[in-house]
Every structure is written in structure tokens, then in C-alpha cells.
Image (tube, rainbow, N blue to C red; front, side):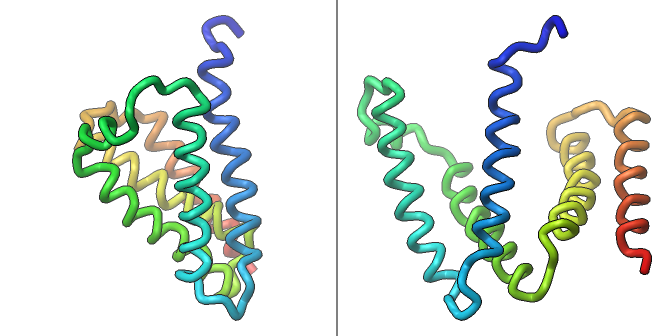
Length: 146
């Protein structure tokens, strides 16, 4: 495959691997543990890992100077990540299966992000994309057949 190289593939591979482990962890949070208590540990570990990786991967500047470049996005992202994490934990506590919950979420998300891409980022709304979302929605119907 010409044109596709490791710098293109590895981030998506990392996302897929991380998502698999993430779903396993979210489903494995103890049933009687408060999800927000669990997330305080999650974010402490995440903050420590992020700081270690910042320095380990050769950042030459001050992390505090980097913080000076902040805009709204990292701040809102922090709140959104809490929503994602606690949403999955509660979904699994409510009985969602790993095998179908993520598929349903992904299919609905694909449709919403198609609109977001078109409206906010002027991404092309092509027939291929629309048919792809339609196939996802048909898949949701098939998944929910008894």
C-alpha cells in the first residue's frame, strides 16, 4: 500500500487498542464503587502518566509555559472526558453489553459527527459518507432484532 506509512497507522492502532482496554476497565469497575471515586484514581494516574510522558518524550520546555498556551478546548475536554467515562461506567452497571453498547454508540456518533464535520468544519458531505451512516443505522436495527 503506497502512501500509507507507520506515522499514519500507529495513532489509529493506539486508539483501537486503548479503546479495547478502556472498555474492559470501564466494565470492570467494582459494582459497589462510586464511579466518581474511581475516576479520581483514574485521573491521578492519567495526570502522572501524562507528565512523565511529556518529559520522557523529549519536551525541552517548561510544562508551565505550555499551560500558558491554553484555550478553551483542554478545559472543556476535561469535563467531556468525565462525561464519557462515567457514562460508560453507568451504562455497564445498567446492563449494557460490551459487544453491543460500543457499536450502538459508535453508529449514532458517526451520524452526529458527520453533521458536525459538515456544519463546523466544512467537511464534504458525500454520498459515500451518507450511505456509510445508513449502513450503520441498518446495523443497529439488525442488532436489536430479537
